[in-house]
Amino acid sequence: CLQYPMECPDGCGVKLTRGALAAHRQVCDKSFEECPICGDRFPLGTLSAHRKEKAEFHAELLEAKLAEKEAASKESFSVSKCLVSVDDQLKKLATKTQVTTHAARLTKVEEQVSSLKEQIAGQQQTLASWKITDWARCRRKYPKGKQHFSSYFSLGGVPTFYASVYPNGKDDDGPDQISLYLYCEKHVHVKFRFIVGDKSNSELDSFLGVPSRIHNGWGNKSVTLGTETIRDDTLEIKVELVKVSSVV
Image 1: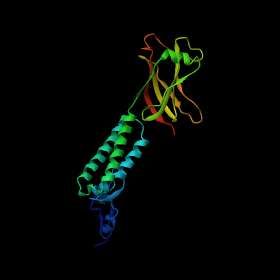
Image 2: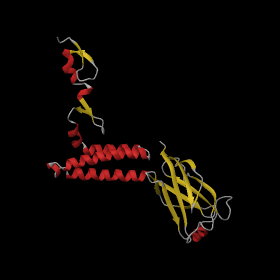
Image 3: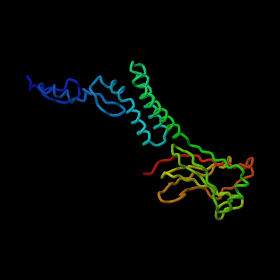
Image 4: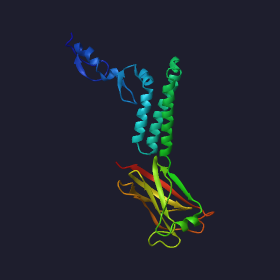
């Protein structure tokens, strides 16, 4: 009897009549499987073909997802697992007879995977070093109240950090004291500390890169330089990152 009541025999839990079973199987959750990368649904047994066909598209999705994540070891580990999945897809494609046809695509995807791995490594970078050689000349060049800027450096996947030092101090600094500041051209919330020589300063917490403000930074004033801090007329200033997050 087509009106006989029953539950879906595939186990989705829907109650229906026997006459509606064929139509139900066209939309039943148990009749499909979902791609773990792009989220599209496909009839059972077709996911493998989808992965081979959309390998390049999946790599682009992974790159986009990576850009949205913060620099955290747990997130990096998750993206690394996705990269392993993409590597596996490339190996499967390489075993097919159509390898010549897909050569250009394979090369492009491999470049994207390499770029993603470099981004992960960049996100894990938490220490930058700035060495100022000829320190005595630097102090003569920048009198009290004048600052000397570093080049750009990367921390936590953000490549637009830079630092400054007042070689003869700022405002009421003493004769053997300097002032240090950290800046960023991207609007970020950052926790960090300066290390001068072997001495680590207190942790700082600030918002950097506020729009429309030039050289908006945060740092330490009145940092005393000991005789052992300057080695071979070179001052080394390190910036240790504790945490960084983008501000939208």
